[in-house]
Amino acid sequence: MRWIVLDTETTGLDPAYGHRVIEIGAIEVINRTITGRDFHTYLKPDRDSDPGALNVHGLTTEFLSDKPLFAEKIDELLAFIDGAELIIHNAPFDLKFLNAELTRLGREGVTNFCDGVIDSLVHAKTLHPGKRNSLDALCDRYGISNAHRTLHGALLDSRLLAEVWLAMTRGQDSLMMDNFDEPVTGSQAAIEHRQDALNLPVILPSADELQAHEKYLAALDKAAKGDCVWRKFEPLTPSEN
Image 1 (cartoon, helix red, strand yellow):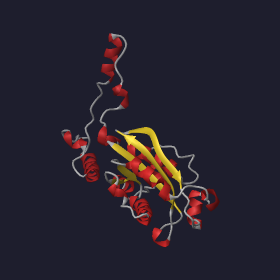
Image 2 (cartoon, one colour):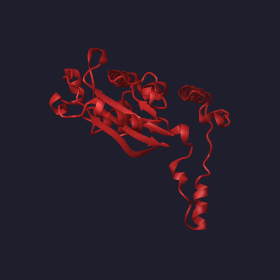
Image 3 (spheres, one colour):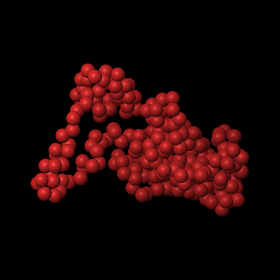
Image 4 (cartoon, one colour):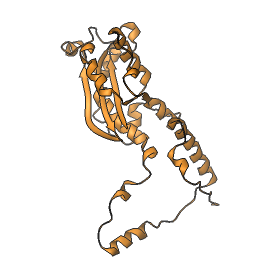
């Protein structure tokens, strides 16, 4: 399973008004592991950024004046995302800009070069309805440090989003706690002591807790477009307390 977590920075909010992509960052994730491979480039837009956009990313026209054009970097980007599933926060925004740049070059849209797109914002809203689901809010929710993020940057935001995505989807792929993955070592007495420590009392959920759990599973089913892995386990009987 290969994911590419991708983000862009732009000169404004809409390519229909001539706004351009000025930065692209992408992080490779294979089998839920961030590999260390990435793609990153700044781009010369041949226009100024809107004041609002400049306040977000801080990439001035002067800084971008000697950077490559989109046409010079697109083949490298498409080779990097080839065959992977893209994960993008608020995907329609980034795809709109990337597709506009590709159209200028007479090229096909992004989805012709990858194995589909997942919108992490949609997934987050499904898991956390009614809550803030910006990248900063999700970093706070999942305990991912973003203290070094004073301005938006495509590569930094991609790295943060990769960690957020793995945290948001962890329950779908692993049912074991990390501590129990370690091999048992030491004397027989120590082994038996560890086994005894794992014989914990079982506290069954109440009817209200089961109802809340079922609601959460339904959200996971919707995000997974099918039954989530938790459905494979036998349901618990509610406690009488």
